[in-house]
Length: 244
Image (tube, rainbow, N blue to C red):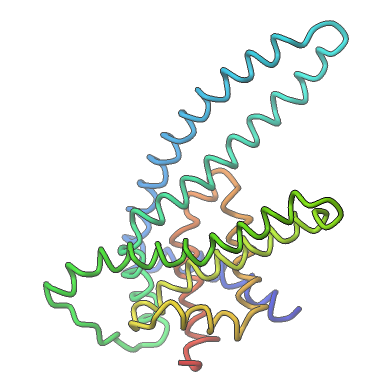
């Protein structure tokens, strides 16, 4: 339990780092990208859901009209949460190379050590496709587990465990997603990321659980990405770096 709480605290520690000189600039690009993508997805979902809403409520009449008071706020909540989740994953994919720079600056400030990375023009050019490749690796790791939980969700009897499994899976993937950035700066393969998080599983799950929860909170989720990158880097420095 202590490891879980420690992991949860890393997100808030990462958020507290963001106003520091040298880090503030790394918040701007993910923030602007998140706002733009969130607005685009939210408007698209609104157009899509408003049509279904009009058709559905048009069929409700008489004594069942009270259901619209329940359905309307539920649609808004679900639409907002879904917009937040989708925008975060899309922004993560599109701006993935940028998050490695933030993780690098956080690690340098925390440890006082300058990362010995090759900053040649070739390596800089390769950082973008390498970042996209890492995102594809994460997706391929996530897909089989999500498919398994989806099967469990439709099997009578054992499907009562599905909501808890989805929560655990979301927390695990969020921890892998963000801890990958500081570890990728050290050119460690994604298999090492999985092993390191597995070695500190409760801490990693605690961190990922908070990130997954905040991702569904409007406005707060706009600063989620830089806060999670900074928090994951702190977790790497404190808990995982010695496992290399």
